[in-house]
Image (tube, helix red, strand yellow):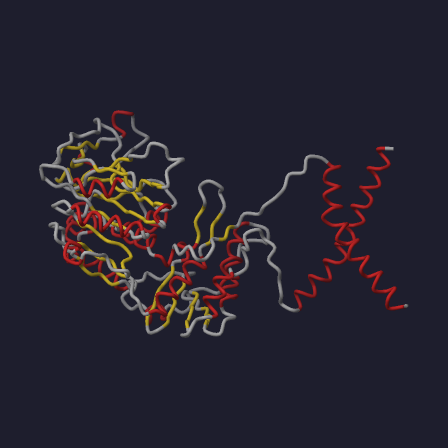
Length: 496
């Protein structure tokens, strides 16, 4: 009896599947002819969100979006069903759906065939435009969006996350409003002037950022157009009032860039320490040096050869530089204060560490040390240990407030870069680490109004065939039977 009942369910299940297949094929053909599709992915991976549609519908000024590639070529070298194809499809579909709105003008330019377009738009190559990137123009201003900034891999799930809506609509918001995002360098604490890194400032301005100075003690507030507040090698501590202003700014999602070069000043920077502590980080009162002459620039043991930590954030920098090493002159180190990372709202990522060569024996792997330098604390690092010289942190409890901290200012200073190049014969792209953190902080790339989309496909686990057949009946046969009943009722009434 049980076998017959099972066979009956199995027969119904297969019959239902056949009916659905018979219906699905012509329905797909109809939608294909009409150029229509229904997004049934769990995260709406191929549809604009409601908030995005509202933003695009309310645009008052025309926006040109130029793709520096041919959209159909993004599908090359991949097949439907493969992750690479899904990633390309999210990007291409998003752009083509945006192009349906009245104020959006989507263009495709193959810059490999038409390099003159880049020369015309960016004659000094400050935006570093590359194939696949986006160039947005509105209100007499331009913003570029790097293709690689639109995707990231979730470390926990392994899924590729797509930030297309966030980046594109965030950039459009900037352009339409006429507000120019600004990088503010603080003054009033003996900081280095941004005149010391003119090359970096020039690049920032080429990417449509303003660069200004700010005296927090005099202004008593941080302007709303700030992308980040930069403290460049302060020689004196913040006042208690300035500390409170900065912490209040970060509670609203404000971002900080702290280039805390070592200072020969007795006494701790208590208020700067307090700001760092809100991101569960602390600085050592030390100055790092290298004991191996092969790992410092010329005769300066304090111009230390370091390594980028192998992270997704650092990969584009390493690829651009063609090396995972860089020089950090006059630098201190940092350490984490986090006790329980699972309960913390702060996420940290180390970005730069002293040189570690795993091919050598334990005694030679790390030859960097540090001197006690300023402050009241003693050097907390033992000899030969890895020292971390730059890191980033983000606090979800403070509207995603972000921090980039570095133990050196000179790694972005023009004079120091030229000096190291002269001593080592190697051109340094270290400022791109700074630029990458600006892009990471910019709300163009992190606006939470528009949901992130992922390439993951949800699935269910069916324990056995009998359960599978029952699920098949419930999910397919019942809807078909209900629809069939409706047709029968309609036919009877029609013939009555």
